[in-house]
Image 1 (cartoon, rainbow, N blue to C red):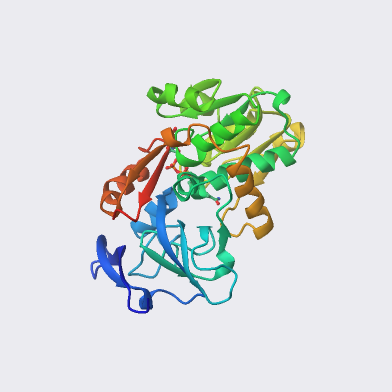
Image 2: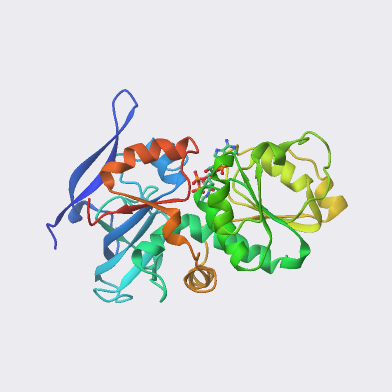
Amino acid sequence: MGNSVFKALVVEKTPEKQFVREIRERSIDDLPAGDLVVRVHYSSLNYKDALSATGHPGVTRQFPHTPGIDAAGEVVSCESGAFAPGDKVVVTGHDLGMETDGGWGQYIRIPSEWAVRLPEGLTLREAMALGTAGFTAALSVLKLERAGVRPDDGDILVTGATGGVGSIAVSILSRAGYRVTAATGKEFDEDFLKGLGATAVIGRDDVTAGAEKALLAERWAGAVDVVGGQTLAAVLKSTKYGGTVTCCGLVGSPELPMNVYPFILRGVSLLGIDSVQCPRGLREEVWQRLATAWKPSRLGEMVTECTLAGLEVMTQAILHGGITGRVVVNLQES
Ligand code: NDP
């Protein structure tokens, strides 16, 4: 095992401060320290992976680097004894794929606390079809549920609905009995969104119309927002009395051009969602839900599969909001 060579996508920073990506052979000995070695069967592509692969300093500062914030595979060795060789595990969040070499390589070495056992009801491929995006969508819905948002309270809005987090949030909310309005910039994907369970599909502009006003007409009992910026501000301003909005993303903007009126006049709540440092107990609960009642019934149809070689095109596409559903990376075929 010590000298095993494997393939990984490596991002290099050139002297001209450009970021170039190529598939290289690496050795397990060169991986970061950790008590757990996993042979990765599948990884996935998230927006954050694309930022890491193109040198965004908010995600990765040390190069050369192998991105991949998600990995699912089989345990090769575990010095702490937390897992046995052959155990199937899922790794999302923590530092994987950020400064620690991630799932876009055929092996990872990590602290065993970062891994959870693959829950019964999911295959390794399905776990990566969900990945951090699915985990974040489920965590968002769990937080809405715990905040007391009920299916008969009214419509739940999901922004960025054709993306990874958005599409799985639409599916989970629908499975949990909520009426879901999907907001998208890809209105040609209406059939896809309705197939996931959206009861209505609206354009992005419909959400942000009148965003400059202090308050907007009350429309949403709750919302899952991945966009931030003007979109999140408009969503908060149009959330019904006592409603709850979750915030996990910034594809539109990291800014929040807001006033306090929705909070002090309508009792609206804004809940932050973090998948990276999510505590282990909650992490296992979320995966359990994803493997059972919240497992998207059409998960297979939401997935495009690629190899390491296919990631160049996919990375550019996700940066431009051009991916519908989820991208799974097959490391066994790479
Ligand atoms: P995707 O790229 O898969 O999806 C984002 C979607 O947002 C796009 O498909 C598009 O959907 C929409 N979109 C893209 N650009 C814009 C824009 N300029 N304005 C409005 N809408 C836009 O990303 P993910 O689903 O993987 O991630 C979504 C966000 O959530 C990212 O910011 C990511 O960093 C964040 N995230 C945060 C996590 C956390 O722990 N807090 C974990 C996971 C993700 P459409 O065309 O349908 O509108």
